[in-house]
Figure 1: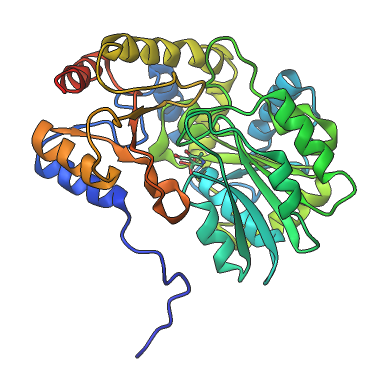
Figure 2: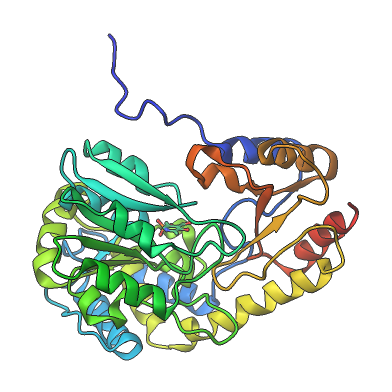
Length: 380
Ligand SMILES: Cc1ncc(COP(=O)(O)O)c(C=O)c1O
């Protein structure tokens, strides 16, 4: 039987390849974007207790009420925006499912969706699967600012959605108030939905304020916001997150969600709800990761790698332009094979694999690992 691929350009990603080579060479792995340590012991205790509370059957379709209620309160406090427990919050299988569901719910064949590149890799396949088109707009190294005039020139009657991501993976940059005001102006009186990927909302440095779409009422009224407990509580393997949006958008989102997954892990929702009651668990996150960023960067400040300190996320990009002319994919493989250190070449997130001689390192690791990585980087 012959099958016609719906995603003919999608193959095995460089992530898989980098991890395979990293394992083979027993390299220090700063490629993978997840924490190299255990989650908070209190969360594990909540999980153990939750397992004994008869939560082994389906959770309600949008998620358990108490968790949605806690999230609504948290968002009101942080962003002064109301998301009603009843019909404006849905617990999802990670941010990835929330993103896919949002795109599937609103994007039709031949619609256009604006995506800023480099970009996290799950947006474009989801758009393509709807028979729609991703219109990519490049953000240029090293600052990766969005050119809002260019965005304006790309908007037309087919533009149905704009996807933003702040703090941003893979560049570690953030959107600022001016960016949000430009966006607000551009979408006024249009039918454009904003999909705002805010999975790193709490991982933002140097006392900057996270510019959530929820802070801007004229954006929030047309926005679906997505979050990840994986990032906030160091539990990427639990695959839990949520989406928040005004009722008229959430209604359509849930129409897809209920047939996409129906509902997600019940007892883990109970544990997370309990853990959320102590705001320290997420409010301390910025300091926790800033300390790691500063520790890592202090160690490599005299190396040949150039960098601008990440403003958010747990990724630091390093430019090796003073060291080699090699393509970033080749340089990344060489770094593993010869020096036993793994990172992700940023070209995999770029349009046409544009090579800016940049590698992405995940610093959500223990200090001894970061120290060993720094020694290797200093050896160039
Ligand atoms: C920008 C961004 N969005 C979404 C996700 C997916 O989050 P989750 O693991 O909750 O599906 C990630 C994970 O790395 C990410 O970096």
